[in-house]
Amino acid sequence: VYLLREKGYFRGLNNMIKLDYRYYDEMIIGQENGLNLQEEFDKYKDTIAHIIADLNKRKDKPGQWLQWMNLGYSEETVWYVKEYAAMVQGRFDNILVLGIGGSALGGIAVTEALLKPYWNLLTPEQRNDLPRIFFLDNIDPDTIAGLLKVLDLKKTLVNVITKSGSTAETMSQFMIVKNILEQELGDEYRYNIVSTTDKKTGILRQISEQEGYKTFVVPDDVGGRFSVFSAVGLLPFALVGIDIDEIMNGIKDMDLALKNTDIKENIAAQNALIHYLMDTKKGKNLSVMMPYSSRLKYVSDWYVQLWAESLGKNKDKDGNDVHIGPTPIKALGATDQHSQIQLYNEGPNDKVINFIRVAEFDNTLEIPNIFEYTGIGYLGGKTINQLINAEADSTRVALSDYGRPTVTITLDRVDGYNVAQLLYMLEVQTAIAGELYNINTFNQPGVEQAKNYTYALMGRVGYEESAQALKEKFCLLYTSPSPRDRSVS
Ligand code: PA5
Image 1 (cartoon, rainbow, N blue to C red):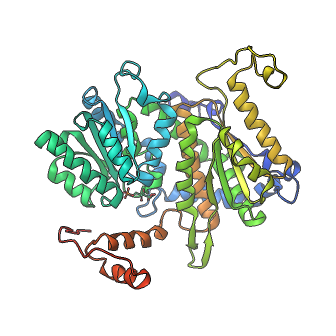
Image 2 (tube, rainbow, N blue to C red):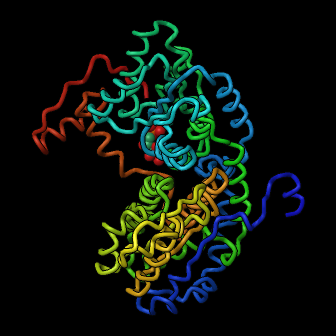
């Protein structure tokens, strides 16, 4: 550890995010709903040790989809990203990211967490002349049209991100934006586009090469929902001035900590096992992610995709029908205390609730002592900081009074180092949970069928059978195959 620290690889346990799982224990929430954690940890000691060792052994092997475990060490990507960000600095007022699912959610989560709040409303001086950033991760025509009305595309760098290179939502947005850019800038339009896609395959790769765009790579064996620390996330982060070295340090330190095969020392393994046992032994298969920090609000959206797409599977690795997967739910503290907590306290006891708590906020906001009314006078002289954490703690205790299990992840502060640790920890937790469920964490066959029907409805060549099936099933109108669809993949 000393040598690693000397090399700048390890900043020590004190700075690491912490997991408090006491409120899962049967001693606190009772035997019916709680677990005898020490007993379970002992029982699963060897299984967990084997899973962690095996993940680390397999991570470099092609086809295992575990390359995301190496992203913290990809110095080359960091170098290229920084070089490009420095080259375009000052040239654009806006960054527009086009992507969906894993190609957008990590970027949204991290930029919301790390940029100054209301970044896009700040003046250029307040943003240190760094660009504003917008993510288009849906295909609502009104939103797209609305955004295009407020953005001057000539002064916008468009980062189109798709690993497959053909995702309909992303590519349709791209076609609209490219068309406008070309009309406004002529041949020069290509300098307003940077694509992030597969190294070799996919239509976006072909277009990028033909048109001469600057491109970044989504590495092999990194699935979309595990790609936030590849160029998918790092490029947008660097373009708006986020310190990506701090992020890499957070991942590396967490990776080192999570290589520990002892469940008593490994927070990702602990939370994975707790969730797995709560589901399989106690029938609690809903997982709520509830940060008490608005800046971490979109970490919940990212977690929902990670947990849902990774763990919701109908077959296990041996081919048995299992139809398993805990359902993730997003919530925000303290806001959702006034919307969801009634259900969580008194409704079905089928959830595990993950609190995220921030020890130290960037600002301390005092509540002025201006009223003496009994109902609100007590607030005067306290801080909003005290209030939000008091609400997190009291909600946790109230939930435990009702026999509801909660776990609390604490970040020292919301910065790149801590946020990277949090996301990486949740990725490893997901991979370990997948092994416990004995499923393939890294595929998503369940999203294909609806995609095929969309292609059929939109007239993509090769999807005539799906179109016929749709017609027979629902008598839906569909478009004939489009002559312009030169399908290559
Ligand atoms: O996690 C995943 O693999 C998906 O959510 C993808 O990220 C999403 O479907 C977008 O795919 P692509 O990056 O190929 O456009």
